[in-house]
Image 1 (cartoon, rainbow, N blue to C red):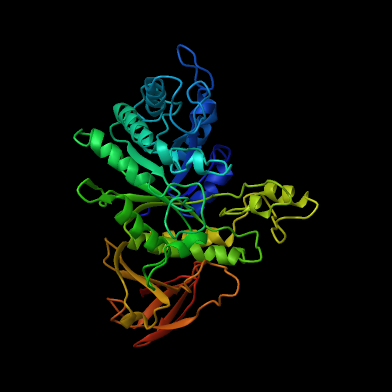
Image 2: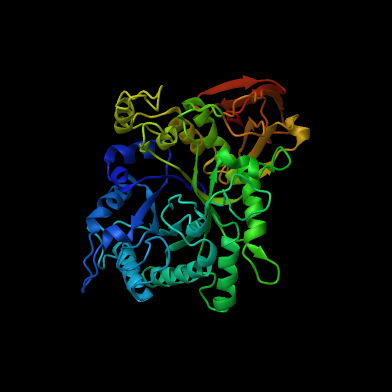
Length: 482
């Protein structure tokens, strides 16, 4: 699906025309949006009493702006679930399926029992980081879902029940396996840092699903698989440079280790989505430098690697800065957004010691450099098909990642290139890399002797020659024949 790049928004942001317009200006095509049962149906009643006002305005605004919603379904009301993040154990599963059916019917666009204006949701993600294990969390709060460990088989049944309810209401809907954190495991040998997530979760779910429901027509009861990727944890996955690293290495390991069990199932060809990926622009600490320039280097890297890994969709976390917390804990204040928040700025300034020194906001929804970088990456390669990762003989350095992509309509080629030092972006004490790469007909088919070079900010310059040497740094450049 060319151009399937989006952002995470929350309902209060998505219903704002200013925020939705800013996201469209970044080239966003999708918005991942939490849809929480506990807020929509807080009380059990007959007939059901839904509070659609918590979600209707956001879906309507996204539809009117031209952004496709991806609804992530999680949390449960107290009357349905003991803990609100795991299995539905206080009422029959049919009560949940009734809610799901009514929800999907409201947003299927068929003008039968639709929300006002018939706004549409076609993409439904079932839970958020369901690999969280509450029995191995050490008191850390979950992120909406908690099916890890002994509950994994229960997620298989939950996923199947949700799929059946969604498809009954809208057969054209796309059902997405809940994006797993797939980091910070408590049960993976020789892995650090540890945390509350179950390494074996996906494999356990798929084994249970296969053994119990493998012969059924809806098996495996999801259309896309989903995983989350954060640059801070890249060293846990890095292999041989230049290409078996970061996002690429994590997805390769995930497909081989979790989507395939010899003699049981092989789902490696299922479409894969990254429903969270991001890098904060602040705050910095003693180990990691954070700023808006470093953050802006990441969107183009992500999109290029995702294209090479045959990823169906990528969702940047998040669209707008929103996190605040304890004034004494800087990590409560991480600014992942593409645009700034006046509310966050004012809250930080009110602290005795500002946790976001250097975070300056002239107006709410002010665009960061990452906003331009996201738009540039989307404009330059969003609609292109991946062709190849260029080898050392063409790049001249194992420190360069260079990907060649082709326009399926015109046949024209683009190469996106950047350096990688094998460490998370901003790690202190690790020098940034600058290397030279020669562009000629062997690198760019359709060579004319003149190239257009677009930097990560979207600024284009032109160079001419029989071969042209460019300086490649960690900020991506997009090169095409002119």
